[in-house]
Image (cartoon, rainbow, N blue to C red; front, side, top):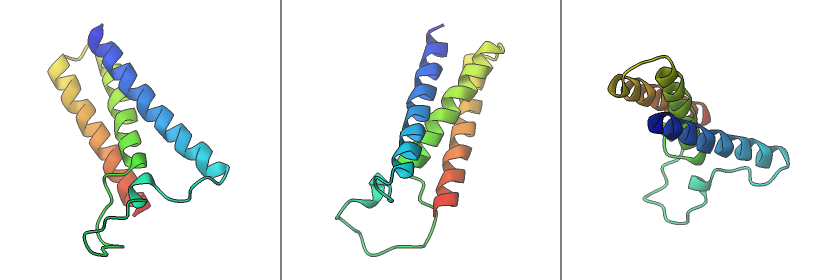
Amino acid sequence: MILRMFYIGCAAVGLFTLALQVLLSVIGVGDHDVADTHDVHAGDHHGGGVGLISVRSLGAFFAFFGLTGWWLTASGFGSASGAALSFLAGSAAMAGVGWLLS
């Protein structure tokens, strides 16, 4: 039961973050990600690679991690295998969002 609540909490955080990002984009507040607002740059490295660490990609990770874990826990998967599959689902979502937004 505690593990299921943990997954629900992760899903709620991720979905809230994604919904807030969409809402702010719709009303025109900030056309950039929080990760892009820092003044400290280690060289101008724009356009190269996949931006995995951003608010949107982390929101996608937590949403998919939580929803997958919740579903697998409810389906009777073991805690270790469920956590591993949830981590893979969250990582795939994070990589996909990072790739789409790069």
